[in-house]
Length: 148
Ligand code: DQA
Image 1 (cartoon, rainbow, N blue to C red):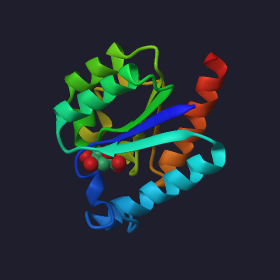
Image 2 (image 1 turned 45 degrees about the vertical axis):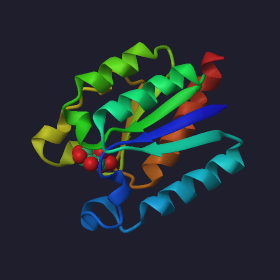
Image 3 (image 1 turned 180 degrees about the vertical axis):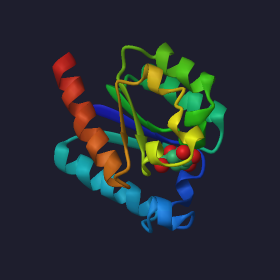
């Protein structure tokens, strides 16, 4: 099973940026935890990050062209603004996409409660720190298994 995790702007800065919100674990630790989990679950994983909206669109399209079974995306700030990312998610249907956040976006500023991407995603996981990614992996594996 091939899954791609796509991280948006400033996710590479976790552990440094606002640790009271995003935790003290670094982006390298996030990648290590996800890679260890995927090794044990026999998942073929690719983890990417970009600060650019267009590059994130390219990564979403690559899920189609490179035949991924599922996508987990933490669009970061673009969650709350990006029609281009929503359109890209719709363009790669029926590949399931889960929206994932470290923080609990529903219990922060009002603008963070708005997600343009949610309309195209099969689920949203938030508020568990790095474990949001592990929960999202568990969920997407189940969804892919049911679909196949
Ligand atoms: C975030 C939440 C977003 O609102 C914010 O812009 C981020 C990170 C999260 O993982 O909690 O950069 O997506």
